[in-house]
Picture (cartoon, rainbow over the protein chains, first blue to last red):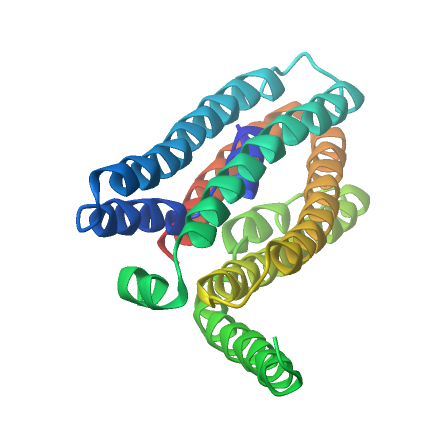
Length: 113
Length: 149
């Protein structure tokens, strides 16, 4: 159980991603249909990767929580699982920066300040 | 970006880092005062002096790592958000900051897992039943606090 909690809260994505996604969708409503579609696609990418991340976290928790596994085995598992989750976090970052690249300075202020 | 714009950008960056670390420092202090007080009290009652000393040392070390993690986590979230919402922050700057945080976090995670197993090996089966329950309760609360903050 202790290990499960470690693996969960150490790598959990912050609420910022969710707020950012919601603000993006809100801003997208004021844009042209094409742009709205593009921004919503990026925002949905964030949501999809948050879901993947949560699934990976649950899988990691159940695996490393096995009382029959040794310290070494758990250490190795954590490295692999951390890598997988890190890749997912990078995808969330990618989507966040695609949105940032899409907006000019004024739009960025309007959407997020 | 002109020379002047570049100069003000880096000044802003330093200001953001300073303010976000300062604010997050204040919010994490409350939650990290005594993260393992129940566990410390329980280990303090172990009769065998040698095992008691070892276990107390391990619990103190665990507490130190938890406090370090809370501090690092709050600093990271605050600074990372401030940097990201600044329109002039590039992906490279945020990636570098993120990688530094991952390195620090993995080291703390490794330390905590080592301490967890050392504690398990030092405790008797009966003691471990109590310690595991106390740890679960505390880490549950700590995890919730991290999310709330």
